[in-house]
Length: 262
Image (tube, rainbow, N blue to C red):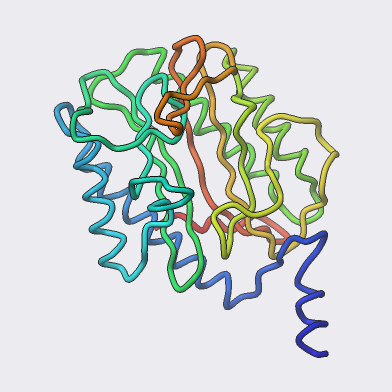
């Protein structure tokens, strides 16, 4: 009975509320993800294949006592996602795909540590990139921080969503609508969905202990997407550039705790 009451108290509308021990384990998973990004950042340059980046990520994740969350997820064949230029998310690393001067590459990393998931994506320039690409990266990253700023107990999911959308659209870019942020914890994708568009003051009320992955996906052109024949790679329908930035966070009474930083 005590266990049942404890479990009920830790959940709200089917969404788990993490305690200090669980958050500590998620923080370690997130730190491993951040270390992986740090290692990858040092190798992003023209001529490097996306398969080489995948191998680097595997080495870091396994060496820290974790496993790549993405590997085998619904049949996904790699440890990370590598999405270049007009690819938004879920690009599959490939030894025949190499980076070129002026590209942008979005890398999504997941690591599972002692049963807990860390999940973070970041978009990187390859050498010198265009002013348009520079602006896209800056706006998308800033939109992530705008959403994080609203992620505190007492606010609602719509406050996060509206902050992201408002910031992006004020800079004349588009928020991708077919893919969203999400809860994260024991599984990579848990409830609730965290939309990157919406109205303030709407949606689920945020409570201390919720853990979410916020991830604005932003395109230069229209927000519509298309999926390649590999069944994974999602790209902009109009062929324009897209960027993706993501952190896993924990909701607190004040500023949220970012779990995927060093």
